[in-house]
Image (tube, rainbow, N blue to C red):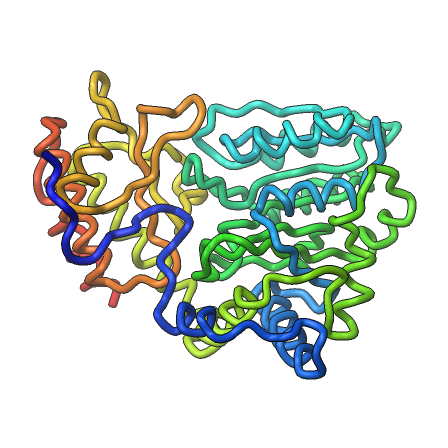
Amino acid sequence: MTRPPTGWHFLQLPGPSNVPARVLEAISRPTTDHRGPDFPELTNAVLAGLRSVMRTSGQVVVVPASGTGGWEAALVNTLSPGDRVLFFETGQFAANWAEVARRFGLDVEVVPTDWRRGAEPAQLEERLSGDSGHSIAAVAVVHNETSTGAMTRVADVRSAMDRAGHPALLLVDAVSSVGSVDYRHDEWRVDVTVSASQKGLMMPPGLAFLARSERAAEAAKDARLPRSYWDMDAMVAQTEKGYFPYTPATNLLFGLRESLAMLEEEGLDAVFRRHARHARAVREAVHAWGLGTQCVVPDEMSDVLTAVVMPDGHDADRFRTLVLERFNMALGTGLGRLKGRIFRIGHVGDMNDLMLIAALAGVESGLTLASVPIERGGVDAAMRSLEQDD
């Protein structure tokens, strides 16, 4: 029989991430009147905090939804039936977003990859340069692909679009980026950024965020895909007054205000350095074990998670089950074509060095118990990395 879990549950997913006690306490406060005179104070604080972490001075909206809802909102507020959208399939979430576009009757063109790297700017430049008639209305990329642990260099993607002289909109999934790694909506001239609450913002799932450029706001005037709940113009019109066009997730907004305050107190640059330190330590552990990572481009390896490739003949999900039952630790599964082939170690959100070392100890012990051929010493390698990088 499986032993009942005792002690702390280690949530080592690349999202949902651990929710700090301060945020849980803020969420648990009594529900308030979302049309009352005091509510705009909460709305304004949340929007100001989101603009700060998304690095934008423009329009930002909050939607009661997951990141998938944010994808849909990005599409229906900018495009019309039959519009061509170019997707880079860098992993399962990029593939899922492309499928959402297909269901809306958009003309989806997919640039395939081996799921081991981010979108390639040179490929994009070549494709856009060949589109002399500018039939491509939008380019969609995932900044931090949590199914593979690979990041797309969005600034380089924008530069490639500029070199091609192409007017397509740039839509970016930054669901796991915002609050975790450096992301610059305005500087990189992203037209719509999609993010969500359950990763770097240290919140439970349930909120999606969108930032949009002036070009995207103009595109909304001519966009003919059906939208009601997702209408960003209606959202902006109401939130500028401090309210929402429908009942918002009031208690989650209280939690979001607290999480944004925590990020501000630590400082975004310090937050990014912390994530980078932890990512380097995890990769040192993986290399010491003699295992490989799904992402093979060093400059594109994610600071949010590490996707570890299992040796041939060993099932990643069997190993994950053993770790959950033995150590009460949840690791991320392989998604889509990577099912059973990889496991994912999340190092995102509310974490410190000791939490990370404990998680890696569980992984190392679990690999040994699962008879996966590794070299011991991954935990020691991670500890040395953290000590040297302090």
